[in-house]
Length: 108
Image (cartoon, rainbow, N blue to C red; front, side):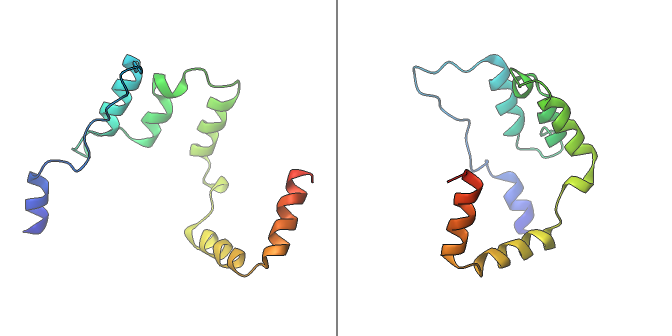
């Protein structure tokens, strides 16, 4: 009953209001319209977002192929369990050790 009543109410979010000095392109407006579509069956998918003209515009060379490869190969993704394990491991690192790792990664 609750689920049925939730479906009949208006969405929580509304279409974004841009500042007066911002004129979004028709491609951006189309993408936002499709992302904010209330009906999940009609809403744009992640794969479609990756192929949308606004998303693909001005990508550096090779990025589109990299995105496609990442979507096509599950081996590049971590499982939820792996992510939780990494977060737990990070919680137990001494701050000094973490700062040193960050400094090392940044070349300081």
